[in-house]
Image 1: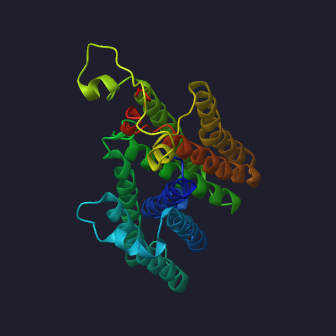
Image 2 (image 1 turned 60 degrees about the vertical axis):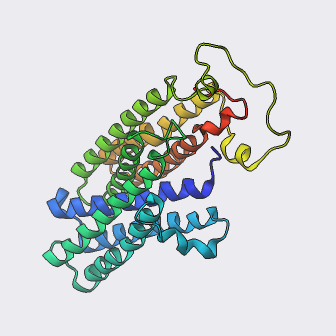
Image 3 (image 1 turned 90 degrees about the vertical axis):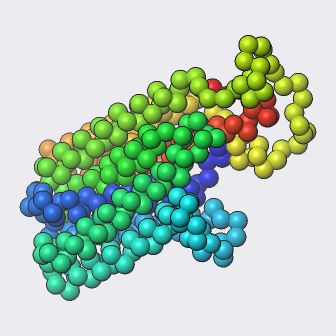
Length: 312
């Protein structure tokens, strides 16, 4: 698939933003490390809104005709894309109301505020699920047609959120031992789940040119393509990545997305140096951004069979 930067930014930043809000709700609900004070809560909510807004705005760059974007909301009964849009928009009033509540009342643990916070967190998590299902329901792309896709979206969104919140607590000089532990666990879980996903898509499977035409016991190859010039299909669905190069990029991704953030958080927690907390945040965002690029570029649509590219 063509790895469009607009969609990479959408899934990366919106997932991270919703993860920040969900973790903020959990931290304040259960008073993890004493909970977030009003200033820390407002910073977390603002960061969540900024992340989600970056993602939503970048998605408009992927539209051929942005002024018709409103049409994406009209098919919510059948389209996961429309459901994602509906819940993403619904997220804003709850997040904004909670931010206003904390600003004017200074309350982060009162019932009314927690209700608003938890509603925002739940809507954000539902949006991540809808986002993952956009790809998971596509039977024409074997690498996406699996429950591992929304599961990985959840794990990485929460990993970004936990890393950001842990870094915020460390930078502000607040107790962060439990929150750092949660971030480390989520980063490790995300790494394991991504490894399982790569193992799954690496197994041979899916349709081939033989199964497409019914000659399962014969060797079949295409002698001539149906055209001599590139088309929309070859531009959007014809991107491939050599195996050796893909392996090298995956190693780099694991280093930046998981290993560096884990090491940086441990060092920052041990030494109290906020610089390492910033390194953890920047590294996890860059690393998961690379993961999203790989997610798209490694996806192979069955239309490639028509163009003589054998499916794995």
